[in-house]
Image (cartoon, rainbow, N blue to C red):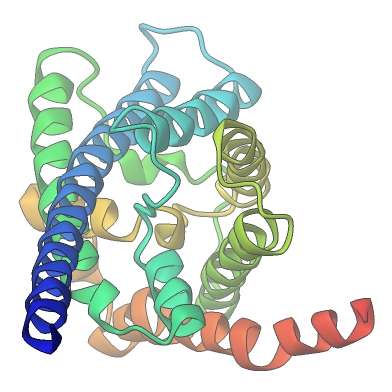
Length: 251
């Protein structure tokens, strides 16, 4: 009898592990597809805004970017687990106390962003032929302010994601719509200052590495602070300090 129960439990555990592995694989595939769609459309819409061939104003651009985020999250398997932005993945792994989330989502985001930028570059050469860095509407030479804007964008995005997906438990279509509207507003509020890399980190990275070389004109210290260190510190501040304060206040 005990042997039969033991075999049954063993089979359940094997089945559970298989289902878990399948879920991780499907999530990685969905993340890759979403990141590809997002990076490609993100830069395509910006290029059309910058090109004289298309008549797009800034408000329409912001709505288009929000729609891009919605399409990228919703199209692959209609799943709320898609992050696209690595800072969102970071705060999710912290919340779940599961660093392994980073191991399958971040590589998928990197590959997806690379493919998306390749698609954009091909389309850009044939149609608009513009430089994305020209999106900056207000010319700011203050590096400290640029770092602050990028870090604030990353933290606000992650906090909005946490509020919508976790606190309000909006994990289905409605939550994706709310998150897309939030992303639209955040893009509109920051993009005219500079190309806010926190809103599409790997996309901007590969856009630069695949021939545009904007980082080549910047110091290594500024690049690390602006694109990596400051956003991560801001996200950690949100998670470990501001979020507990808000939850305590709600109680």
